[in-house]
Image 1 (cartoon, rainbow, N blue to C red):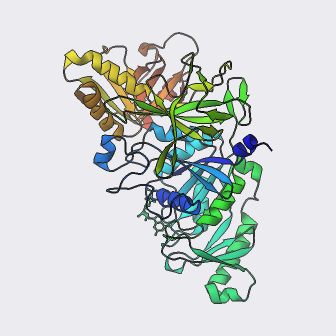
Image 2 (image 1 turned 45 degrees about the vertical axis):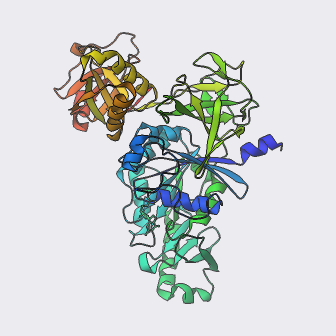
Image 3 (image 1 turned 180 degrees about the horizontal axis):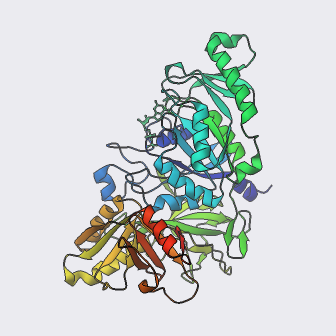
Length: 530
Ligand code: GDP
């Protein structure tokens, strides 16, 4: 294998998803710890007062002590080069979170053992399923009182519609957490923690070892033997093919905080997950090992430096090798360009890089030329990666400038921010251009919008909440826009258009979606826009 091939095949790029507080940050830190990227836990994300290691760019982040944007980290572990895409949690939840999943080849889902499947996990999970990528489950916080492990697996299967295969099985929980039983190796990993800041030590003992009673006690031993018998009889077989297609999720139990089961999880995960996956570009399938460089933009982060109004475009390298000295072709812009100041995040550091390989995520300086979904490739190539879907916002406001004289700046700002993908903007056939309906996935985006329009464009906003929570795109291939009179719509439904001219309906409730579907049998509605 050439250096080039081995660089690509050792890459693993995954997103880590969870409901807030399930332990995503803690688990990420432990990964970095094992990878030697950090010396001590506690540097990945400062929640309230310590510095946000990865994205302390925007003033609003500093004010609130939260991370508005998702971040990327790279580290090395046992020959693998690992890219973790972090997805922010709930109050700072935005479309970025969804789009980040478009750049990943697999997902690690962290679940709180006392809580099970929660709202945010469910949302993110839907996107993973749409992509058909492998999903690994880490059931965390076993050092606390936890729900029954069978019940947790059943909940994942029922709620998320994916089969599970427990790779290891917990012995006790809370104060009585004794470790896990590795079903493949058929041995117990008994843990002794030393506080979680450093790596824990593990003792491996076979199920029939007489020492076992001494370690976990006869009651737990009997319970474990019963559990394993039940598990072997009742659960799915392990099928790698189904794992690779996101149909079967390998499940691991552990405790990120006290370091129970983190390293075995990391090792099994790396063994089971895929090297960089190919991507579709219309008819063309672009493979990671293709000779030439290609990438797509999945996220744009604006105004890290207010004085320069610059942006960083994050791209996922799909194929080949990125070389900072070579020109690339920006397909949507129709121009050859040199990507400037390419950078990558290594744990807490931001570094300017010279090269990157398929699977990596790089951020480049964007003078305002990129949009979400843009393709970059070798000059002479002409493919475009399939567009990144638009996700349905859940919060809507009517927005206009307080000062009507500022209409121009208002529209410019709204359009630019929409181009970055932070908000979606809509109009109704009856409103003038002074007024825009803004939709966001997380309400924090409204604050960001208000802040940015004031600070960057000098426009104060008037915002009015709208009662809608659901949006569905109308599928219509007749070439003619649908008129409101052609539809039977209740009073709590609104017909709007996005800026690409696609028509959509805004609904106040799920119930009203059903009602409209029922009254308009020929209407086809979708949750993800093109
Ligand atoms: P995130 O919001 O998903 O990133 O969650 P964090 O990693 O910030 O964790 C939320 C809280 O749960 C923090 O107070 C952690 O210390 C705690 N926590 C994380 N993992 C564990 C665990 O395995 N056991 C216990 N007892 N607490 C944990």
